[in-house]
Structures are given as C-alpha cells and as structure tokens.
Image 1 (tube, rainbow, N blue to C red):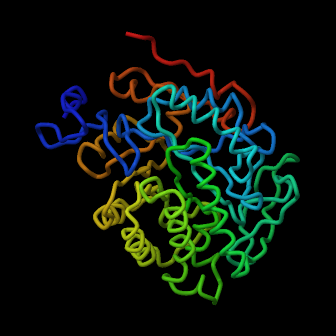
Image 2: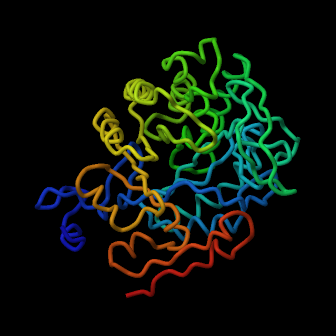
Image 3: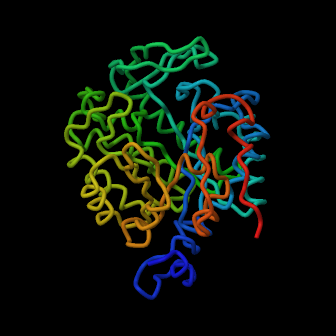
Length: 375
C-alpha cells in the first residue's frame, strides 16, 4: 500500500485494504494524538537552568517537533540520587516544575502533546555528575562494567550502594511525586523508564539484582519494583496518563536477563490490570518475542523497532500499517528533522543528525535543523 493510499482514511481507521494509516489521529489513554508517529526519548544534556531545570532553548527544541503525534521527553530524574549524566533535568523541586512550564506551554501552543519520561539511572551514574556528589544506588552492590562521561572526562562506573527495603519504597514514592510534579508542570502524562539498563531494568536483571528479600530472587519478586512504581504513578496521576518503557534482553548498561521470556510476560500480566495509556517496547533482536508481547498486551502498543547498524526510517511505517504496532517511535531522525511526520508523509528528503552535537552544547545541532519549505 502506498502512503498516498493510506492518507485517504480518517481518524486512524483501517484503509480499504485493511492497513492502518500512520498519519491519522488516534488515542492512547487520555492522550489525543494527531498521528501515530512518536518522538522517542533522547538525552541531550542541555539542562543548564537553575537547579537542573529546563531552559528556553529546550522549549524551542521541543516546540519545533510538536507535529509528532506524541513527544516523549529526554530522561528526567525523579530525585537527586536518580541523576546519572551531566546537565540532565529533574522534576523533584518547585524550581524544576516552574522551569518545565515553558516547555509544555510551547509544545501545546504548537498543537503538540508531550509526556515526561521519568528516568532513575541507578548504578549507571557517577558522583561527579551530581551537585552533592551522590553515590549511585542499585538493587545490589554490583558495579557495572563500563565508563560514563563526567565533567572531567570519561571515568569508570563506581560500585553502587544497595537500596534498603525502606529506600526501595522511598524510590517508589519519589517516582509518584515526580509524576505529580509533571502534571503540575503541564505535561500530558508520564512515561516511566524501565529500559536500557537503568534502575527499574536493574531490578529486573538477573546479574544485577542479587537480593534475597521480596524485591529479588524469583522473576515475580524482580518485577515488583516496576509494578509498584507504575501502580503508584497511576494512582497519583491516573492510569490513562501513565506509560512504561521496557527493553527485554537489552544488554545495554551491562545487563543480563537470563529468563526474560518468563519475566516480561509476568510483568505484562500485572500491567494489564492497570489500564495504562500505552506500553513502549524498545526492541532488541527478537521480533517473535515482541509480537508475543503485543498479543498479550491489552492496550496501546508503542514500538521502537530493532534496527541493527541503522536507525528507524520511513520503511518502518509498514509496522503500523500491518498492525505490528499501534504507534512507532523515531529517535535520531527527529533530531535532524523537526518536521519529521510531514517529511515522511510527503517523501521529502531526510536530513542526517550530527553525533558530535548529541550531548551538551547549545543551539548547534539542537535547534538549528531546518524545516522543509512550505507548500
């Protein structure tokens, strides 16, 4: 089916040949999306505002991309101890809440929808990247093999402190409080980051979570933190505004998941009871497993497809058309193409992003990528 044929349909309904149109409006919980093309969360490390807050430059960046059906922000730490990288923003103080309103106002004024991705990095962190030289935390005192960028250059990751049972519950409360702050700041919802080797993923992982209490051991115990966190956030802001991102079997962050084929179906079973806005799956290599999760999941499914050695591109729109997913997230293409949905719909040329400007800096490689010329 051609894209021109797909665009003949309305309101996200199937086209005449049964395919779904990625360019028509749809709904995900309380979120009214103008299309099924989602801007994936991407750390940019430009939160130079007071108290790790958002800036006017960040507001310009996100507003430029408001034609996405949905924008998922860069990872935002729910607490000071949740910060992993330099110059990443938070949502755990009134100053930070106030700073994000300029972002949400700008996106809404441009007709977009935006959710805050809450990201606690756990052991993927370094004291030098936090204002108070905070020691990273994790399910167990197991250092990740690897290095992290700091203001003084790349350094080895450090051994984290294992969270006590009381601190685990405090972490759940921090996520819920940050989610409430996100709604106060004008966000349309929250996506919890349970992927890519960060704290929630660390609790799921067999090599990091070596606990013997109710938060570790069996798959059911290892999913508990994710389930309790999602539940607490849903209670705080409404399940219809709550989502979760997962990445089964993703080895990023020195993660090993020996029993992911058992763990994630258990997790999805629990999440199905909450009626969330959507489930965001960052796929690694196993499309069969992704399809099984898609079938098991009762709600809206958002896919960041596996693209080894490449990036998500126009050819992946077929995954929406054939029903593999309801929504499709794009990363690097949204960096270089702020009007990506229009370019995809019209076949306009796609610009390439400059990796040298991904992290840190100011407007170069951030807000200076041009839109296509008006028709």
